[in-house]
Image (cartoon, rainbow, N blue to C red; front, side, top):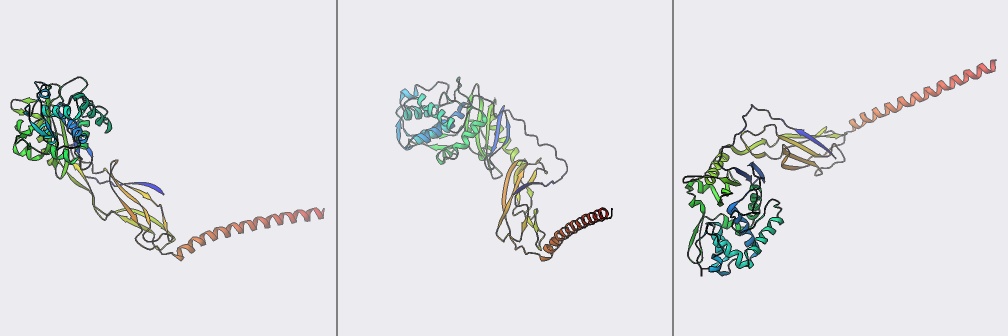
Length: 405
């Protein structure tokens, strides 16, 4: 088996590099869930306060640790007294009897600290114990720059994460159907008849922006600024947009404005690009001693990738890992190798190649090859004979000369 890199260069006229729009948010990450890759980031690996994006961790921890989300619990005044005066609340009252499921929506949609405190204290006995479970979750999924000290995200020493790890946590959480349902809901009526609404309404998001955002969690503190973690659909690709440290100007909230701007930019400048057509010759495998000189392998599909308008036309490469030659011993249906298509160093797709034709032995080629070998052997034999004869002649001459003397 041998490996060969075959680069296909597709030249085109020069394209100016794509410039991302200026946004107010200091920290940004855009992640394509469909292709599992970062599309754009700015400061996404910087450790920062994350405000109520923390409640993503609170919610998934509750879902994974509470056995029965439809169990009814009672909100007490003691619990409400633990909520800081400056925390956002869902308007729960002492004596309210709600299910844990109700509390998940009250925590995520209006970002209610009264709901998160109720979840933490009732389910785990104390907020500290519940926060410990949140940190265990972070460690389990490999978040090395994340640490929680409360369930709300209010600024505190030792409470931090990064935009990239918020995205990784959200990506993990969205695999849970209960979490996804909560995250993508914009209004919810609890079992006591009270309705809670997404903070997107509070931030004066227009109908067009709301329609583009499938689900979200917002946040705001002095250290974190205005934040928004959103699940959006762009050209059939699900993407996560994480924004931290945005500002507010009058009644304008830049966490929502920036998200809308970035969605529009992606929608206008990204699409699935055709890198290689189906049926293009991608490899010729030589065949020995057969009527066929080589087996040709063609692309069995269109090779597509979701790319910006300034993508590198020369970035496609095709790599072959398989037999370096074939012979009449290979039969139809034999696996002969794999063709892999890469955009730079990123694997796009691969196809397996099988021999699809019989390879018929060619007597003429074999004879020609054997005749060549026989000629070499004959020449070598003749040379040996001549050397022996020369030796004999020299020896006889020496004997005659000796006898004559």
